[in-house]
Structures are given as structure tokens and as C-alpha cells.
Length: 597
Image (cartoon, rainbow, N blue to C red; front, side):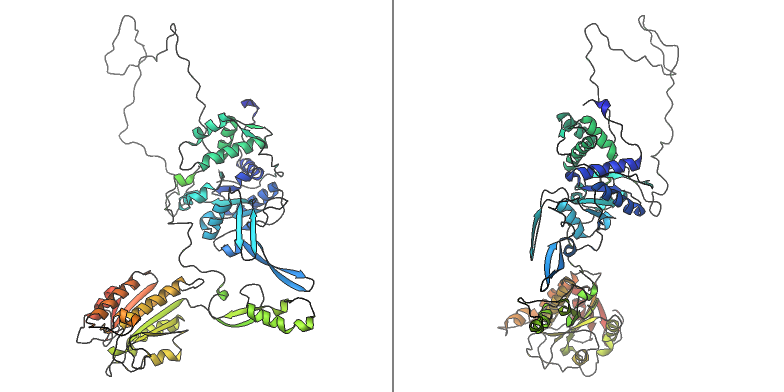
């Protein structure tokens, strides 16, 4: 096809956007469209324009910071049967349209930098994929993804995103300055697969892109050139279509170099006229004439001019805009570490779905159902319903009633052998108990050295919902025993903290670990684990306590705070300080107030 038959590319930004969306709708390989610097107020109009081009009339699926795996891949629906209702697990909003007739669905991400980790992983798995497989309880789904993705992203923050995520968006366009109204567009004709790409076009693509970090960019430009040819009614995609696709995305298209014929034996290569610099003596020859006009070379300036910097590019001004379809190559933002990996602690679902189960009630929705109570309620009415099969009606549904999950925790490690009749440690613990009361913190009490312990070689522990639990006050006044398994008590504190922070759905954000001890642990950790000692103990219990305390120091210091209350014993008075150093915490004077040493 001749180059002059290709119409000029649209100069208007709205027309370029319409053409890009049309190409994405026509070719399933161009399922991802990424718009840089799109005005947030225009997300909805652009989504409606894309929906119209796709030929659909439904509502798009919106993904954001709260999108979870449970909401994206599967959904539970109620189906009315002849003798009741039934539950079915069906494909979620991301894959529910795969393998079905009709226009593809649209998935909209208003801000790609704020998308949840679950949404980012879904985009990496679906965009450009040949098949999507979802295996879940009661669901086995396998089909080719057909949904189109429309995402917006500030160009200055593109460097924060994962390269694997950005490479999945084949169609990229900078739309800074886009204004309403947007043009109307008809539904696209998916006839792209019948267009062939010439070898000339494949050679032209690396010239347009230059060296890049991924071959996906070359594939994306080739597919976009094929879609441009299909939209224009052509059956072959040439190098001219590649240039048109590059201009559509905002790339600079270099001129095609023309071959220069080598001079023949009787041809001479024209030379530029000689230049005469003022102050230089002319050199003349019989065959060479000196031009009468003098050429003056300007002297270099004293100060070189720097590149122009737009107003508002500094922090606090207007957001910077990078006019390139690949702003991640130039963005100065720091990239997040492992952006596609879930954090080690996260909360899921509403707060009412977290916490300890304390009862049941009639369900208002399908979240957090109490299956045993639901089946039991249905079983009571089976004879009255007179159905052949076991039937569950909506009136039978019950959900869990949960206690509110605490966001803070106080861990008390109490060494009863360090307290005597002259010292009441309640005054030293009062600030921490008041903090736990005002913050509604949960309390974990770990006791060592109690005379009434079931096993004097092991620590005992119990959890309370708050400091108002009567067991907390009773634990402050137990008589002292003989053994001090301090290392085992600190190990129990480490276990409690790790379980609390790593438990799925837990909203714990802060914890205080307060150890009241003189540091003289006389029970090694191996003895607490295995039974009676076989020989001399010496300082093994103290060393085990210090080694175990270092595990607490290795935790997140922004959420775990530690303190050691010193009873100020004369013998081995340095041990509480060593324990506090191992825990990276404070030392509190137990007998002289609450000041830090």
C-alpha cells in the first residue's frame, strides 16, 4: 500500500484518544489502555466513551486500594430453586464475561499508583494472557480473558510501579490537557487478526523505540500498528502504519534516511565554502579564491544557559508532566520494594468480620455466615416445609457476632521472685495500665516464679480483653516461688507478638512489652522445654533470657515498644539494664518512680 493513501494522524487530543480506544477495542491483544496525567474528573466520561466503543451498556468494574482477591475472582450468589434457595460460587467480576457472547466488559482503575496489591497482580495475570484459570472451592473456570482495562496514572509517579505491571498496558497515551466534550464513536469492528504485518514494519519498530528494557514494547507497537491498519480498512500493516502508531502514542518519529549514491569517476563531491575567521591571516592559492564576506564566530558566553525548568515543577507546586509514553524511564520517584508482593500483615474485610466469635444473629447479608447455626435452624423447619431435599430459606441464615478486634496490646511479663514486702510494683505499672485502659488495649499476662504455678520450670500465660479483667489485678499479688524461668517467659512474649501481628485479619497496630524482673533467671530455656535439669545451671538461664530478648528487638520498632522495670536489687543490679539493652527498650526505676535511667 502506498504511503500517500494513509490519512494524516489526528492532531486533536480527543481524536487521538478515540482512535487509541478504538484500536484497543478492536484487538484483544491491546486489552490494556494506560492514560497518563488524566484529569480525575474525566475518568467517568472516558470510561463511558470506551464502553460505547466496546458496544456494551453495562457499568464498568472499578478497582482501587480496597480491592481484594476474594472480591475479584469469585462471588457467591443465591439462586431460587423450586423448593428453596441454593448457593453457587460463580466467576468474579474480572473473569465473569470470559467465554460468553456479547461485548467485553470494562475494568477501570482511576489511579494505578493506589491500586491494591491484589488488583496489580490481577492485571499482570490477565492483561495480554491467552488463558485465565481460576480454581476455587466449588468453581473451576478456564477461558481466555476478554475484558478491557482502562487505567490512569500520573506520569511523575510511574517510576513507583512495577515494570511487569506497566509492560502489560500495550496502549499508552499522555492526555494532559484533555478537555470536554469528547467525540462520539461507533463500536469497533474486531477484524484485526486478518491484517498482516510486513517485514518492513518489523524492521521499522526497533528504530522507532530504540533500545528498551523489554521486548513487550516492540510487540505492543506492532499490534497497535496492525490495529491502526485494520481501523483504516487496510489488509496489510506497513512501516507507515508503525509511524502512525508511534505518533498516536506520542513518540518522536525520525525521518527515514535516504540512501546517498556514491560519486562516479567523473563526479565531484561539492565542498562547503571556506570560512574566514576574523583575525586570521588568509591563505590564498592560485586556484582558490577567498570570499569577500567575512564570517564572524561569536565568542562563547561567560555563563552557559541551563535547561528551562517549568514553573511548579518543584515539590509543592504543580505536578510534573512527562510527555512520553514511557515515563517510568525518566521518573525520579523511588520504586516500592516488591510492589507485587502482599505485605506480611494486612487486614481484610470490614471490622465487623474480624475478632473473636461471641455469638450469632440473623444475617443481613452473605458475609461471615455461621454455617452450623444456619443448618440447625433449617433442620428445625424441614418437617413443616415438606420438601424432598434439605432446604435452607433466607430466614434460616445466621451470621457471627464478633467482639471488636483490639488495635493495641499490652504484654506484661511478671517475675514474682523479684517482688518483696517492701515494694508494690503496681505503682511502677500504673502508667502502662492506664495506657491500656484508655486505648482499649488487649492484655497478655505472662507470669514466672509464682508459688502456685502448675509447673515452676515453665511460664504461665493468659489473655484478657482489657485491664478490667479481674485476672489481671489478681496476677499482681501472687506469692513468690523458687524457680525463675525468665527465658521461657520472654519466649512466650515473642510468640504472642508474632501471632498477633501475623494473624490474618488482625488489626493490631501497636504493642507495649513490659518486663518486671531483676534479671536473675535460674532456669535455662532447654530445661523449660524438656524437663528437669541434669547438672549445674550457672548463668545459662540469664544468657538464654538475653538471647531470647534480642528477638523482640528485631521486630518492627515503630509498632513494638519495650520497657524493663528495675526492682533495684543490690546483687546483680546490672542485669535489668543488660536485658533492656537486648530488647532495645527503656529502663524504668521500679522503686523511685517512672523516670528513665
